[in-house]
Length: 170
Image (cartoon, rainbow, N blue to C red):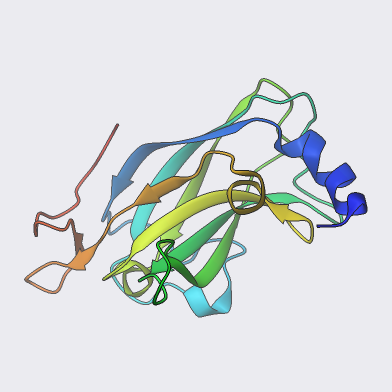
């Protein structure tokens, strides 16, 4: 990482937290996550999640402009041979509704496509576009859910024991 990137990223990334506030197979979920990458377009049985995000740092997180802060949704694959870390699969982005000031919180609703999550864990991680991922580059907190599986009836997602995910709160 270059010094230039560090100067931009570090004030924004010094402290953050992500917390799941709700998760469901709600059929009333929006058709697509705003700003989601085409590869992660909602196909069927989307998983609706609500994440509470806290800026515990000293700089505001801009959510517009050249390098906005967004929530990355990353499909985690099996680790490559000889490594312990899961490989990163498809990615999508979820925008936040407005700048997040220091010591403030915001909630983000992400629609995770069933096809994106089935058979995988899903990682939610803040990033500053074009600069750095908060967790990957700076070891800030991330939220990992799953693994998920298709339910036996083929509708919705289930946990790794086959139970439908109707709602979850930590």
